[in-house]
Amino acid sequence: MLLGEGRQSLRTGRVSPSRSRGKPQPPAPQDPHNAYYEAGWTDSWSHRRCLHEHRKLLEAAACAAPHGAGWYVFAVDDGNPRQLKAAEDEIVNEFRFKH
Image 1 (cartoon, rainbow, N blue to C red):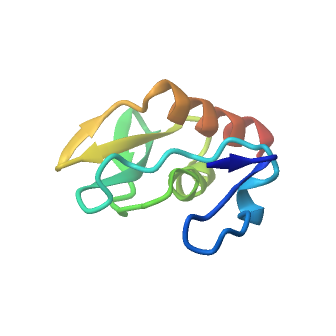
Image 2 (tube, one colour; image 1 turned 120 degrees about the vertical axis):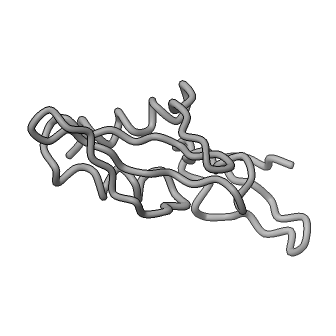
């Protein structure tokens, strides 16, 4: 249940401070056990990837950013890479243009 700007916990009844700022939170992968984000980039016309299993979208973006302008993030669901959804892509682009 939303109260004011924050989100109230059903257990404690307290408002979470991390969600009270009004910023959209990165969406979590669909199934946290079988889904993760991975960083990718191009290097000398070859596609490279970090091979890390990032549980958070912005962690994957931070992993990719040092590799130059040709970096990207993709999701892996049940071992199958997929393109980011629009909401995920928007969060990565916001990170990209701030750093």
